[in-house]
Amino acid sequence: MIKENFIKIYEESFKENWSLPALTDYGKHNSFTFGEMATEIARIHFLFQECQVRRGDRIALVGKDNARWCIAYMAIITYGAIVVPILQDFNPNDIHHIINHSEAVFLFVSDRVWDSLEEDRIEEVRGVFSLSDFRCLHQRDGENIQKLMKSLDERMAERYPDGFTKEDIQYAELDNDKIVEINYTSGTSGFSKGVMLTGNNLAGNVTYARTLDLLFRGERELCFLPLAHAYSCAFNLLVPMAFGVHVYLLGKTPSPKILLKAFEEVKPNLILMVPLILEKIYKKMILPQLSKRTLRLALNIPLLDSRIYAQIRKRLVDALGGRFREVIVGGAAMNQEVTDFLYKIKFPFTIGYGMTECGPLISYDHHTDFVPGSCGQILRGIMNVRIDSEDPYNKVGEIQVKGENVMKGYYKNDAATRDAFTDDGWLRTGDLGTIDHDNRIYIRGRSKTMILGPSGQNIYPEEIESKLNNLPFVMESLVIEKNGKLIGLVYPDYDTVDSTGVSHNDLPVIMEQNRIELNKLLAPYEAIAALQLYPTEFEKTPKKSIKRYLYNNY
Image 1 (tube, rainbow, N blue to C red):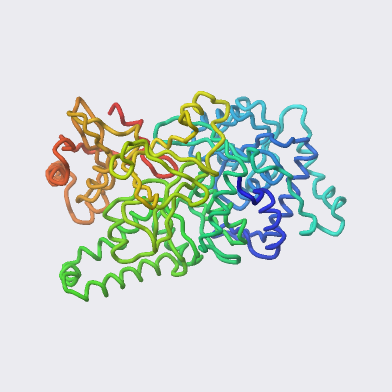
Image 2: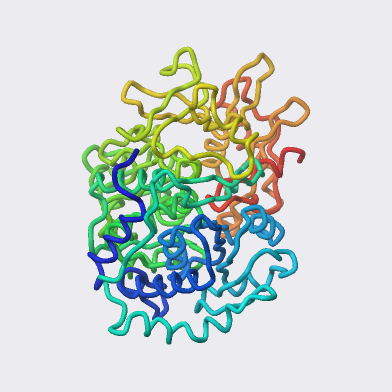
């Protein structure tokens, strides 16, 4: 059991960092110090008390990332209620289902999402509150929440006649083994399950982060990944709020253009990325330079190549604000060409591994220890790993984990919980891979996506896609099995097609040439029979992983 109490971490942090900036909505004049956050949290706690919200009641939270999303999250957990963060990308039917399945009594929601929901489909919700100003948007018949909200300031003044101070902060006495969050996953397999995370699970992530020396009091982070996802929530909210770090919330779709402007202005000290974003920056910023003939020739000259790589590294570091210690990449597999190039130019990045069921962290290496192809060492003293294979160092098997970060189970789903664990209590990750003698994890693919070859060979479509995505005019791809043959679905890079003057009518011929080149890189049993053009981008999870199950019957 983690020694530090999860809730008390934040009680102490808000007191210690009272006057420091905590949250800013990027591009808006809307900021909160830790003290102002604590005051808003106190108002919400007062509301919960007056409405007789009990410890352990579920409270749902769905909407675009902003400062009040963070305040609502912190208010819920520090009261002793259970937060149910819901990805705003879910469709209204899924949001209704999660609210009802979790038996949420209150809902904090952005105005846009609220407009898409139907009150009569969430009848058990007692009150609904706006994430733009915390006003009450809706109350169940018989409730007097709106009336209570009107007198809240007055009653707060009565309770705290000298104003709310840091000495007034007192949060729930809650043991670390109690559930504090139910996070409904949005996986590539299409099934949403409520992951029950305890204070101990989340404290494991926060206290481990403290040992890494990557973020310090008074520093800055830019949050552009959805906070309802475990990866972003842990390292763009829970860790910064524990350390006294100032978080800027982008609140916009993180296109490379918008992101690079925000990096320039915020100059964050740590950057969390998903692979897709870093791959897009690589394609837009670096590949055009590398394709210039003079640069290609210069890179063949000894000594000159290292100076050119140093210049490219400096340009990329400066573009990301210039002050970060490292970029942590997680959430999905990264393109091997991009990984190898960034490693070659000594760019300070690392690739970690986790899952919602571990809140999320399983393995990590500091960028100075990062080994290309791996996703870090299992967290020492916190997690253990094993491979379900007779030779875990050389023969692929399912990655299984155990330790402080592992969930309690799936909410109201005993069958799924049983399936998720082995008979001796190890969590089945569903990922296939190997480990080395330092317990560094190497992922090969998902057990659910692995395809059996004609003679029983294991084929990992993600590895083929990684090679295919490096070929000309390929934006993204998906390898599927059809009538016993492997087919590659390709969404072309139309920006590059148009900028180079290539006719769209020529794309089938180009893709056939790509197929021939790709098959030279593959084992015979992995050979692709055809590449088919796909008309739109593939649908993705918030982690930017393709929802593969949607294309199984294409």
